[in-house]
Length: 223
Image 1 (cartoon, rainbow, N blue to C red):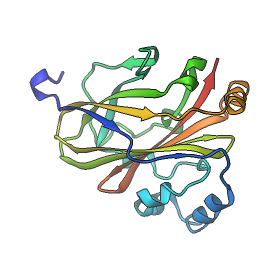
Image 2 (image 1 turned 45 degrees about the vertical axis):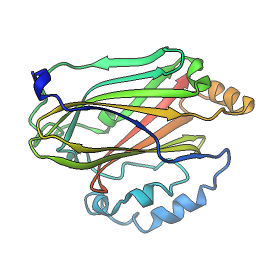
Image 3 (image 1 turned 180 degrees about the horizontal axis):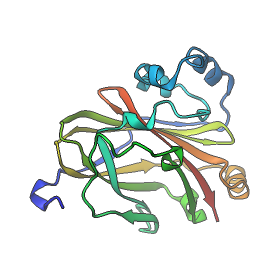
């Protein structure tokens, strides 16, 4: 176990970028992706930049980097809540020590980074959604840890967030709290999201010094 003295700092970040759109052309995403479609993921991942993913208008058809690219971060806990009401939508924690960083992703398939959530419909009404992530870091210092998250409904961009954690201490356990300032959605979009499970989805891209090392997908059902 990592003692309290070894634990890294707790940080709270508010997204510095937010995009809200009900209609976004899918064609631009296809155009952006065309130059990569004939390249392998191994060759491609080092060329995926924050600027590139910030221009995507629809979910990616696959993952933009291999699982084995992540030798830096192991998630050990995750909580999603409504900051204003206190309602908790999701909460999981793993107190165990991290596995060896050079091998922990070997033998794992894409189901590891494909998440399926079922939330209360109150999630869609929240004005401020908070996520608290606990993660362990590798023996090397991690500079400029950044996450860009793109949210879609039926392949159309509805919002985008950009968070920066900054520097991570080697061999530390950290808590990263992000607060999403969520705009009010229209009543028609709210009904559509309730009626179409897993048509609401997200791509989460993780960077170190603007180099992509992790890409996760999530699918949402609201009841």
